Image (cartoon, rainbow, N blue to C red; front, side):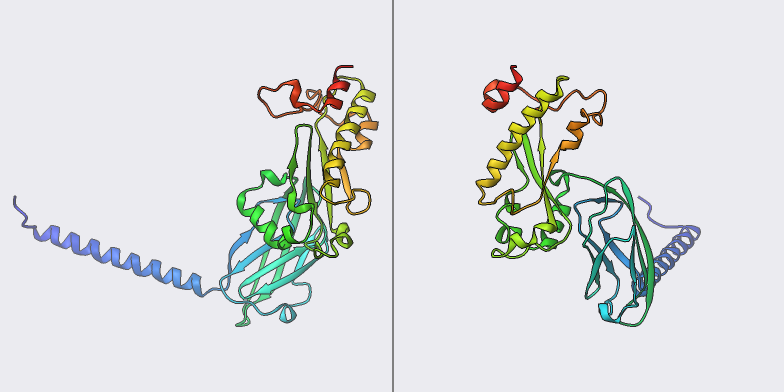
Length: 284
C-alpha cells in the first residue's frame, strides 16, 4: 500500500490542522470569557413553578456580596408576594412567605445584584404557576422542598407522614412559609401550612347523597389524622376538595364529561376494598 502523500495533500492536511488549532483556541477563549463574566449559571425551578414551592435558587458564576451589601429592593416579585432573601457564596435563595395562586404568572426581577468584585447583573425570570400534587413532583423538586423546610420528620408529627393515600381519600399539604416550628412548638406554626383532604366519592346525580358520602369519607380521613396524635380541630388548618362551597353549588365546576371520581385507581377492585359506610351509601 502506497502511503506517500503528494505535496498538495500534505499542504491541505497542514492547513486543516492549522484551522482546527485556531478553532480550538477561539473556543477556549470564548469559554474563558464566559467563565470570567459575572452571570447566572443555573436557576431552580425553571419554567413551571409548582404552587407548593417556596424557594427559588439562583446560582451565579462568582461569589456574591452579602444581603446587607446588596441594593435595596434588588429582588422584586410580581404579583408582590412577601419574601426574604438569603445569600451563601455564589447562591441566591428567594424564600417565599406567601403562596402564589395556581394558574397565574409569577415574575421575579433581580436588579443590579453585586458580586464580591462589585460587578452587577440584572435578570428577569418568568414562571407559570401550577398546582402539582406532591407525588407528581420530580425527585429533585421533592428533595428541594424537603431541604427548604428543614427535616420535617423530626419537627412535625403529621407532615412527616404526608402525602397519605387511601382508597377513598388523599391527605397532603401545601406551605406558605418554610417554618414548621420545633417538635415542641409545631402547633404554633399551623398558619404556615394547610392540610388538604381530597375525597374520591362517586356522584350519580343526587347531590345530597354525594354530600353524605363525602362526609363519611372526610370523617375517615380525620380519624386517621387523630391517630397521628394531631387534633384536626385545633392543631392544623384543613381544606377540603371538593369544598363545601362546590358541593353547595351542585358540583357545577366539575367538567361536563366527569360524572364523578373513582374510589380507586384504574384496575380491578372488589367491594371489600371499599369502607363499609361508603358501600352502604353507594347501595342506597
